[in-house]
Amino acid sequence: MSLNNNDSIDKHGITAAHSATTNGASVEVDEMVEVDTTTASDIEIKPILWLWPPYLPQGSVIYVIGDGGQGKSMCSIAIASAVTRGLPLPGMESALLPPSDVIIHNTENAWASVIRPRLEMLGADCTKVHKINDDDKRLTLTDKRIEAAIRKHNAKVMVMDPVQSLLGDNFSMNRSESVRPALMHLDKVANRTGCTIILVGHISKGRGKAQHRGLGSVDFINAVPSALCIGRAEGLDADIRCIGHLKSNYSEFGKTQLFQLGKETGFNWLGEDDTITPDEIMSFNATKSRIDKSKIDDAVQFLHEVLGDDALTTSEVTELATEMGISKRTLERARKEAGVKASKVGGVWMLSLGDSDDDF
Image (cartoon, rainbow, N blue to C red; front, side):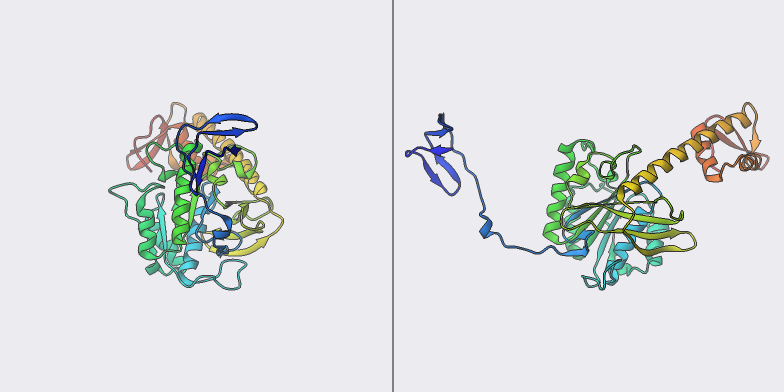
């Protein structure tokens, strides 16, 4: 585009233009147009700072996805616990931050019976762990209290778990026009405060590339500089989980990190594995979900067959299920899906088909 001699220009752009020529064609400019620009040479270069290289950059929003029960919450709490004590994370010779405060906003687990005991087990300095009280007004991704809480405690990590519980009333997690502005807002908060904001999300039940398995819009992953997936992988023991690096804008991809999660062993970092990919992690969990669904369907059919029009004691049903190779956990999930009714008769719990009136 070229301007005629009768056009005037200032640093904000065209302030008074009568006509312009674009590709030889004359274009009339009828109104004032202002534009604010910055020249690259005026921008101060800042190095990328890391909380856990190359997985967690400081002052950024990070997205962590995984299926339920795979250790997403425990892993995020383990990271936060290490930060409170200034301990290095796997692969680091030393921590890059001194002992620092963190904020955990978890809407799926109770603090008194789950979160605090996990923090204690992981050796966190609980005087440096805080939560935002939102009983009167539910916290959302664009809530001003997020930045206020980070600044109040000079927090270096904030965990928001799960992200699906922090969506506003008019927020659509499947639409880019909802997701992008919210994540851009959070990114500015993270950048201004230097806090690493970890969003924990669920995955969809379909198949496909790991980057496309997050529940909701792909912008949850596309709009952040680093994303991780957590789950199991083929050939590993059932209590071993993997952290795959499925997106990295600031560096090369990190190797898959392993941790152990069990009732007896608790949480333990196991080191890295450079052979397991994020796609393999997501593929394994998708396959496992289909197998679990098949088992539940078989257990539902079993309940319909053994109960029919009759009622049996819980012990009788459990014994029959065990003989059929149905685990107690699968049986309980199938009971809910089949609508089994539990009633106490003469001090004994009886099961029959129908809407459940009681818990047992």
